[in-house]
Length: 132
Image 1 (cartoon, rainbow, N blue to C red):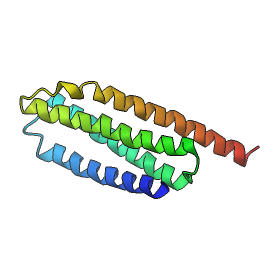
Image 2 (cartoon, rainbow, N blue to C red):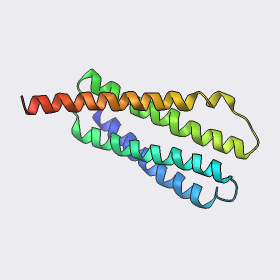
Image 3 (cartoon, helix red, strand yellow):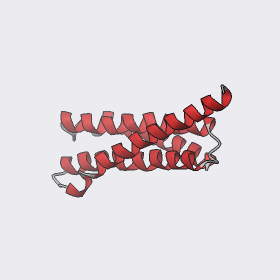
Image 4 (cartoon, helix red, strand yellow):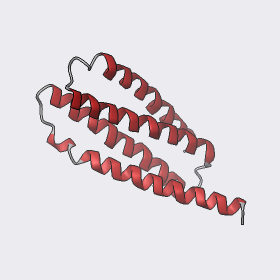
């Protein structure tokens, strides 16, 4: 699982650079300012959480259930949050309404929040173990 977390962190990080460049150059002419801002939000959150995945992959052994669940919440949260924003902005720019993606974004955000809560709990457990 530890290796999977690191791989996802690297893939999400690299994709965020590609998508950020794509948004800054190719989509600048196609998207409205609001659409571009939303797209950039997805890219930023993807990069932030890619870095969190890499830090978690280095910090935790991923042998405990709470660490494994934390990793999956971050991975699925990134997919639901950022990729639903990409889908919403892309479809909106093309005059298509993908209404089913509307509730996916906040659900992804909720998964990311829970991931952060689990990260805090796991870090606290390490701190307690190191400093009893």
